[in-house]
Length: 333
Length: 276
Image 1 (tube, chains in turn blue, red):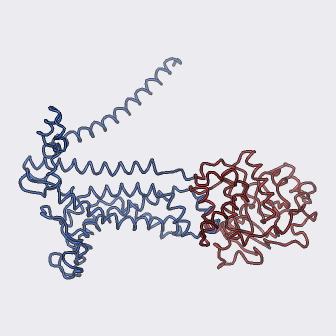
Image 2 (cartoon, chains in turn red, green; image 1 turned 30 degrees about the horizontal axis):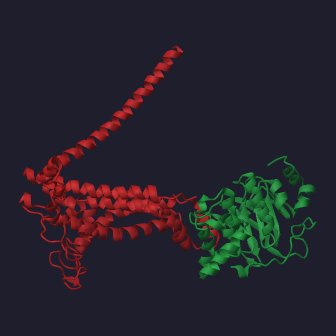
Image 3 (cartoon, each protein chain N blue to C red; image 1 turned 30 degrees about the vertical axis):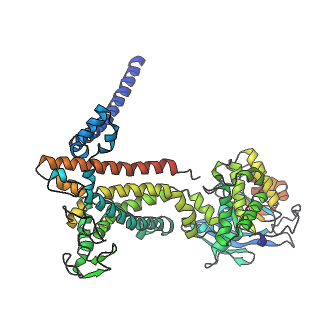
């Protein structure tokens, strides 16, 4: 084969490969764009006020700007009349459950990561634990729902049935009023979501700690710091930006979970926000699931509107994570 | 802490001419007797007997893998971090048995500072790098701490270069400055011994010169043990030299003697560059 044709073949191969990569990238982006467009189109009916949009953009009446968004969609409770339906209870429930989940999962997960990475001896037992945590991260979340149902909602039946609780602490109207078993309350939901995200928090925190150069630990130990002082003053501060990034991504996972809460049997129609830690609640993904399952077209549009809200929240979460990754992460050595 | 630091009790004198590493009448800080070390089944150090005198620079030389760094890292028990590293025999710091199972390694490492091959400042300010160690061990008044930081940075001959940017990140310093900062950090906790594991191998010639000058300066206050691959460096900075080969101590004595009149054939071959 002559040198020229070899060269031509090389160029053609190169271009063909480039074209293939471009094609697969554009297909992915196209699918995403289609998804967002179709959801926006479907969701816009209940999310935006068409009259106000018309007034602002066609006639330049800026006073109507705040009315562009149909705020009642965010501030109304669910309803069987689509025009009156809103996601208030779901938004508040999601915030509550995610806060509980974060308060429980982050200290536990980061603490476990610090122990396993900085203190645990490297032996068969810790290898087994490591292997199990990695497997748990891959367990479908609905499985955690079953565990949550038995352990938190019903508490193995130790305290009577979940409908008729046997034990309660604190005055009925205090936010920290708790009844046992937790039933379909906030604590049951938060704890179940904690189970879902715990392996993710542990794994991402361990990776963050592992990325801290060993030379920093040695430097600290060599001037007489104890392993505990080294972990808390040197290793952990150096790893915090990455740990937070992982934690936020884990929280956005918790925010988007419907399946495990579905197993707990949380209610869909709720006409009040939770008053205490074991009060009933619902969350956005579950509200979406419910609306999408109804036959009427209007409810599908409601579901799409709620999806838009959920997506905006998740994009904000991920945006903060990206910001932390790029801005807070200083060079370590 | 500054009050526990040895004072300038003894001016640096020329190395004694005796061929033993234990010149008569001198105070011995580190004493190894029949010291053996293993990594798993690998016998890394065999029957090392070596006395390291106080307020002298002792350099450990030898080809890669000869065990000199292993010996250094047993003196402050940094080898505890290496799984399946173990040691037997006698290794004493001022009569205290370093290898004793219950020996307080945190206390040991306060008495024996260490400087590593690659400068490893903390990702904190210059001030915080120095203040970190002292604050672990004692509660300080702000002014006392400021004074200690300045004193340590002066002792490491870096004060003039950093005094205007104490609160800037230590990672903005050059390699040589970072290494002197690490020396200052080690000094700040008031050790009696400084271990240096190839302290100049990651530095350019100019920074190397500044660190070497500092080492010569510091022997007035500290007992210094330097591991080096660079024979000129050993000749320049040290009073005593110990030559390790394949896990054994071949020869130890005054640096002049080792380099100009080695007793052992292997030492001669190594210092004249015939192998290693």
